Length: 67
Image (cartoon, rainbow, N blue to C red; front, side, top):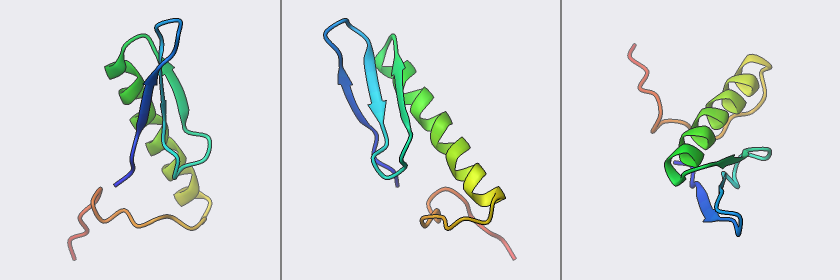
């Protein structure tokens, strides 16, 4: 599981960050939009790492592999 840290900026925008995935930091006009953007960017970051053979954190809560 990846924690998404969320807070509202003084201008009303929401900022969402996934501390365990460097570079995952997004803004949204609403809390839900910021969360969705953080989730989408997190999946992109993980996909890039997978495609380039980089080490991935455990993702057993995301996928189930059936033999």
